[in-house]
Length: 165
Image (cartoon, rainbow, N blue to C red; front, side, top):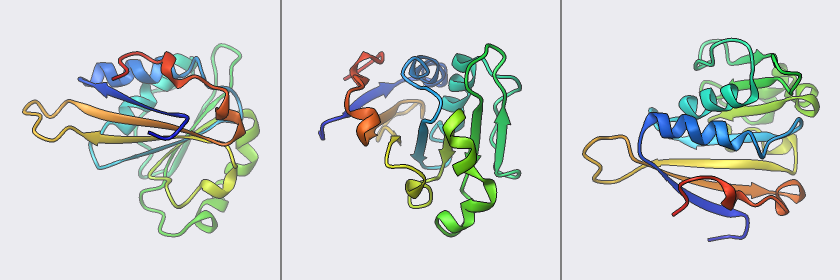
C-alpha cells in the first residue's frame, strides 16, 4: 500500500454512514474529497454521513439531476458542496460552470464520479475508492481505500478511522 493509504472494510450502509461521520473529524474547509465506485457502492451513503458529521442543513441525497448541491452549516462549520459528476463527460472544462474553484476554499467539496475530472482543482485531495466485496452474499460489504494526495494529507493519520483492516 502506498504511504497515506488505508483500507477499511465496511459491512453495512449504517457503517458506511458512520465512516462518513468519523471522517469529518479529519476534514476542514478547503478539502476536496473524490469518491469513486460503481453504481450502488455507497458514495451517497458516505456523503450523508459527512453531512451529519459536519452538521449541515438539508437532506443529503444524490445530486445526479441537479449536478451539485450546497448544504450550509448549522454549526458554524464549513458548508458541504456535494457534486455528482456522473453525467459530465469531459474534465475540468465541464466542471467550470459549477464554480467549484470559488467554493473550495471555504467548503468541504465532495465529488462523486470525479476521477479524471476534478484533480486540477487542487494538488491536495482525499480519494476514496469503494469496491463491493466479491462473493458477499448480502451485497453489503465494501472495501474502502482512502488515499491522501498532496501536502495537506501528508501529515494526516488516516489510520485513526474505525474498522481498519
